[in-house]
Image (cartoon, rainbow, N blue to C red; front, side, top):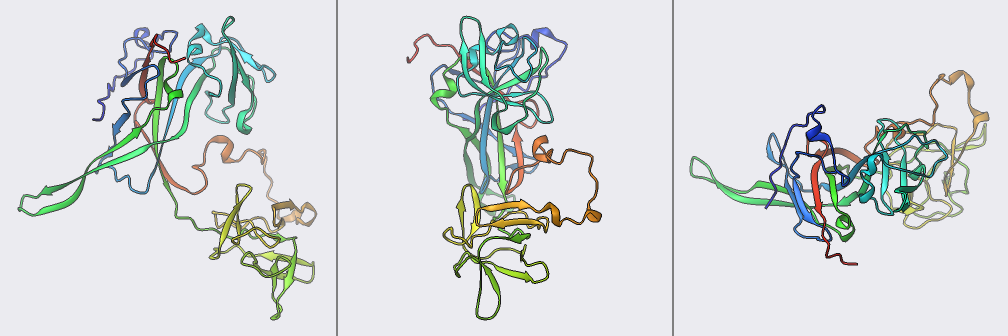
Length: 358
């Protein structure tokens, strides 16, 4: 059965609630779920509903994240690859392979834990993990140590027949919806308190679009005089518009209704990759007309072809797109909802066990 949550109110000025032990457990707060170290049962199961009742989970992707919290004991700069944690809180919960995310709303740096020094309580990390920006961090800066990141979650729905007041029976009514996290061995290998958050993701129906821009790869001409990508006609070939004045071939930007395939984590036209394959997008927004493509994807932006009179000045670093500020849902995502709705997450306590499995 699903758990009941404590839903306690946190007082930031009440030390009895906010002081934590070395395992990160806050004083005076009951955990939402307790499990023994090394155990993988029982599962963590929560019910989810909104103002309309149990949420219809059909067609949704469910994921979970779990983390411990800690703070820096000392200031670090961009060159430091190891550090101590304030009062050593969180050190007992760190494992090689965990991902640390520093507490900052915009452009938070991620670090990969690659080792630790038990004697001196040092954590060794790889800075700027997953392309994030390496920064200096002051003493006391907060961090989250992720043990579980975007892990799959099972969904369950309960259907019942409901008798209405007029005596009619409404069949297969959704009366309860649950998110179920199956614990893995590495999730519970270290004791302490962690926070876990679920998220429901609704993916868009996949519609691929041609990118627009120019084609600089191989081309061929059909008997009717039209030009296509590739040296020969295949299901990857895309019709081009040839401009004789500047000797360029333009790609359209409409929906692609043909076959598509994946290559180097990108989607291209055609069932197989060849010299006529064109990069596809999910946006339907045409790229800059001076962007060039070949069968490998984006080749370059021809700065010499840009009409300077059309440039709109921008005083923001153009590399700082919304991606860097965590302001996008991700490609193909229509909407996202997180649980619990209020509070940081569900508080999980992993009780220490001295009958270790190693």
